[in-house]
Length: 142
Length: 326
Image (tube, rainbow over all chains, first blue to last red; front, side):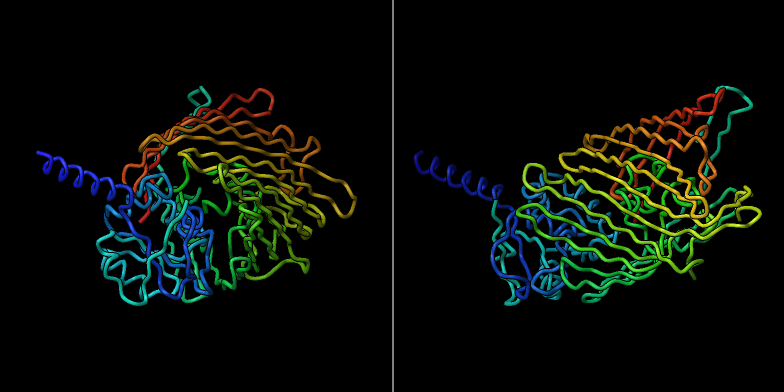
């Protein structure tokens, strides 16, 4: 019985951890090193910050609903992914932001970030375990 | 759209065909290109093509970006935030004071020249600047000087914005100063309105302030401006004042909103706008926007316009709109 409870608590713990993280922000290795605050990340995804380490910022966004991106938007922006994508569309329309790359999967996000020197994207924790050498994880602070 | 002054004679209702806005943008390293072309049916019921924007830009740093071409003047908030994108606007249309040149607006909405902008850190907050040197206004208020300037002096525009961070992130407040020298108009009539035009050279000063907030599902924009036309031959000044505020709140896919507009022309009349104090108006509107899908929005708006002209009946307007963006 104690073993069952321990397993149950372990599973619940994992689930809580997945909810707390749920996403990993990645960047091209040529983008500036170091962590970013949530405000920094919001500036990248809304066209306020246009350059990163001498490269034009290009964000990679999912073409369809993606759990990792939903978690990212919820935790960093406090809005829905649909609302953020609409904001991005408007910033592109205003000329304030480079048109984002669309990705159909985590692999596509990694590929897009690897191919853009100022690239940023969001993938699931699982996908972040095997990144190519020119893509690195960005710690996101408060 | 249904417009009525409460009498059968003063009532009009119409369907309006969609404006088709073709938008192209691309970024290659630090260079960017943006073009916006609009197919729009005019008062003659015929479609025409307007190249609304075409600009090439170079991004040097976050604090310096330069564009050249035809652009939406960085004046106030609305003009360059929403362009012609009805999908992005919460109400069905732009406030009248920031309407386009051919729509009764008071501002030089489009300009041809050079634009620079950038953003500086001020602690956690930011200061955004926009500076423009452009052809400015033509003698005919409806004309945009796409190919050449009618006089040598260029229009100069400066906009500064303070962008708050922390608890006030999403709030920006800013101001504008715009100066232009408008050539004399000796034409018998405007190219489109048919109104007689006879004025000497003018100096135009536009001073404005704006504030906007778009966080926590709140939509808020407010602008105010004073436009002064000085007759160089006589030194007589004519001042027009205008302001609007709109606010809304998004609940899931629905955004109810209200807007209030106020415009006053000088009692002696403005030689450029060809309006006097009796042409002033106040508009109150309320409506709802439904974000039906990621690409489609449905809007319904009711408004009432009160005219300063003695004896003029208020005009009620009911407008439905389907806006889409792909």
